[in-house]
Image (cartoon, rainbow, N blue to C red; front, top):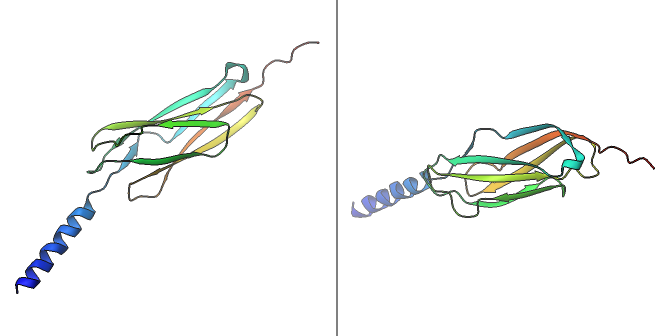
Length: 130
């Protein structure tokens, strides 16, 4: 009987530990820059999120879909109820026209990676008369 009680207690504790997990919650996962001028340089968006789970959230890595998009993010663990951010900067140089870029966020949360999207339309810089 004692073995059964110990086994049952261990099982309950294991389930309780597994139930604790971080949850990354964004208000918006897409940003439209609309029209941006090539000569104005980088177009930057800061995506803010909240850890709505009950364990610290750790961003393991962030991957942009192309080299034209640089990223930075909160490096320290985000405690439950606290906020963090991921910043995406798109370089429009020599890239006139419509663009759609994705940023994939990998964390220690149980859910699949989160995908953020930035999009817009780059207006080319005026031609220089010769």
